[in-house]
Length: 409
Ligand code: FES
Ligand SMILES: [Fe+2]
Image (cartoon, rainbow, N blue to C red; front, side, top):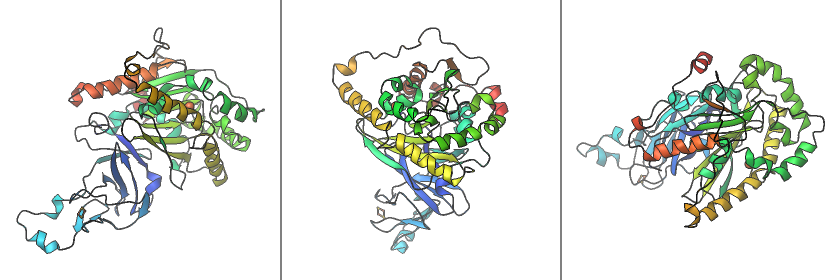
């Protein structure tokens, strides 16, 4: 909590969740409850969901709209900018020497957005979000900037589920573990793929890219993940967008759009291209993780296709999804068995592709050829270990941005 979550830029919302002024959502940064609110001036503010009087929670709703947050306990009221506006018996405070209303607003986090995704940190010393994401932004554009008009989370909120696993299991899985899919998901993926007789899933080039601990394993199949949602109409529609997306992003990144792929933005924000499920793995102590998941789509997508995405991603990656259930069982049992004293001290094997890594020249970030590899997972834990060890930001290294990513900005 102190070394990783209190310092990192954490995903808190998609701007589309708080599209209108005075709308808000609540979520978590580490184990701290926070409010993400759009103030009257359009600015997005992120603050602790805790009253500075005695610490009570000030907002119990998942989302909503309103002018202020009023604490249940003694009635202190705060604006959408977090400022303390009023309280019962305000005169007693005003008569108190040295008391100033402006000193007692909700504790505010730094908030910055990247193409619709809002991140926040409570660490004043943390580098900018641009430096934190670095060249990963160039790859993120493959899902965030594939179509005109940006993206949105499908309305209706998140699916939420609790798994009895440590948060690092899902983060490690999404950052670079396509290996498990060949075994864990064989039963779930086969029947859905089977229904698509006519759809060709190419798989030529495949890669892992890591930047500052964030990682994405992918191939250039364009529709590989999407094909397992079991919806031929949707695939036809996606195929019809391929040329336009390639014209916008170039063929390399267009190939990543719906491909067989998974990614984690360090530490606990992950997504799957193709299903476009985006999720946070919220730690609840070392042995429990709450998963919040949304589906991201281009805003310009026809409503019918958005609905097909809703159903396709629910069918595969939701608490009752064909593929998500496979993963959950493995993460829970891995967490439980690794808790044993002897077990937790045994060495685990992260050796796949330890030798002969091929760094692809000219692509931003640390790129290795071949999707089947532990390269991203090693770099994820390298970042985790660095943050756990470092007393100061200066002790944590950041990859400098590359010319290619900068040019694409
Ligand atoms: S704890 Fe919020 S008003 Fe007292
Ligand atoms: Fe999986």
